[in-house]
Length: 314
Image (cartoon, rainbow, N blue to C red; front, side, top):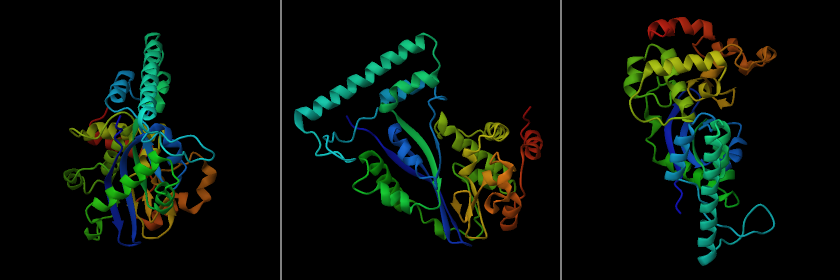
């Protein structure tokens, strides 16, 4: 059974002042290798959530594109598998996996009929799930060195190779003009033009659409008002991770959060770390950030009124 893994560059932006590059991917990979991806803490990511996706929608996606191992490596000592199964054993392994998948679907359906929430029911099929992930970073060498190595698990190696290929096929981002200083995944060119003097709206659009990887795709008609509403909910509730993908070009080649030469929008907000004692650390201090960018520190109260009035949000 074929398994479709995907990697797409959503946005890539070059900081002409510091010569640093920020890249955002959308990838589709097996959920069970997510733990390996999350070890790379220099990268920011948001992942399709089993707590957010309805059971029927998750099941339909599972049936359309279930995960089947890329190879059935034989058991041996160590972390790497041996020579893959061939012939009859290969087909039998696929059949056993297929039966396991559908047995878990049956058990999940029984729990669903009992009224159990999706945050539990959707867990039963996790070994067979492919998930969508938005991932952003400025330093990729360690990730690619480790994950494209022949010793890496086949699934994460395949997705890392697809990501490298996607970068080589992306248009030459360095030819853009020197005044490009915002990295805005999922924001369309016409939206950038319309809101070119309203950076907060651009941040809201990008952050909301990155957050929606939890339960939606990013195709179809855009709804900026809905994006702004979601952005305000994220900020108010302290769900900051989706605000790590859009970023501002820094004047200094320094670390801001986990980005080199780029300031994630999350870092513009007061108290985003949740720990006031962290304010003495330079790269987390909004006053320090203000010194290397033209943006002030922000808070929910400072943005909610203006955005709500602008988009008629009650």
